[in-house]
Image (cartoon, rainbow, N blue to C red):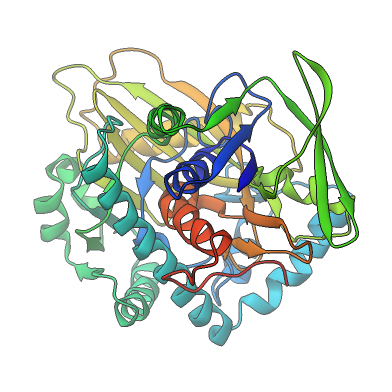
Length: 416
């Protein structure tokens, strides 16, 4: 089949690779000049199955109330008249019920485990250089109550096959010696040795090159204007690029445009509860004598992650619900560096941090849309939130199976 993939982030690029490998003729369209230039450009860098607890959980509402009005809060809701955010919030509330949280954890863990397996198989198949490390992810806690809650979440994840286990402070420092200077802050942690880290931007660009070598075509600097539908099928996609306006047609289409997917599909009658959650990151160049972590870390109290990417340290986190605003707000950037200085007092940067922000496409349940729509030849691969890098290979492989008429190896959901 001839298939058009809309979007060349880590999700769209992985989808293009698996479709091309399955023998399809693939065209990828993206408005940026290269792959992974938006949400996948400078994210947290973690392949983190252990991050499977959704934002919607029984603790979410009390925490949100605690953070209300704080400019530096890990979760910040900007006051705005936004019907999409209001609708998203209404859908979020029932997902906080314990039964729904447990169900969503199971769905996320299964897809994320499968995706990590697919990534490992991909590395055996082709050479990919993306500053990858296989040293696990250590969640650290500085609050006894949050640590107790995390123990329960880890227990549920183990039931679904994830090797996430509680550890004491001594074991935390044994796993990551760079935390020695923060011993007085820690109350415990939990460790998932099978998790990984790496640069999603470098990965996506390397995979795009392999996909092109295998026959896929990437059309960059091409804006997707609208989808043209007729009856129960998509007839084509109207785009604008160096060739002017065009109608591109194919046998099948995949919508993988992240936070922009709902606006693209709304015009053809598909409403998806995906809302942009702005995340921030700082990329810190490291001096040779830096006492910097090599194991990927998640600081649950501040919702901040760190990943070692060669001679750089990526620090990322927080969530700001502010529509499609991409302003770099200093009051949201500075807490990243302040927390890093608390955790790693001997960190010696080789230069100033490079700040960035991007829009994570977030569903109320944190479960993405991967699968069919009411249109027979239109497929979804969007809504992965903070786990796009984690779920990319699994989502792409599962969708390629579905499009090819095969049952995917992991349960996924399309439009509903």
